Image 1 (cartoon, rainbow, N blue to C red):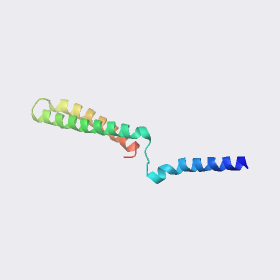
Image 2: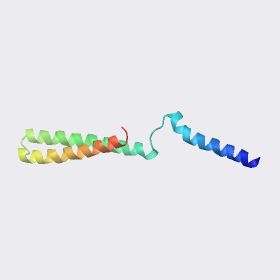
Image 3: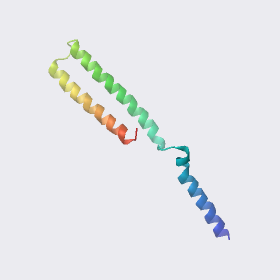
Image 4: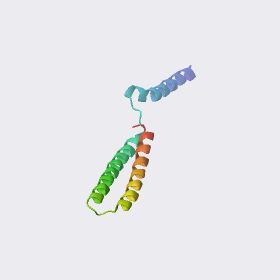
Length: 90
């Protein structure tokens, strides 16, 4: 009888652990929120860098050739950030 009671308690505990995220609607892993916030900040910073490079081109601080190289690199970095955000399930 003790084994049946222990098995029942164990089954209930497992069921609660499995069902808890579904009830709360919590689909994220605890570390994901911090990583998502970090990536969002990096994304905004990268967008700002792209805008700054465009402004530098307009102001004559960058040549067209230099701007293309910088812009290509910045946009590749932005795509990598966006890809990582998508993988987290934004």
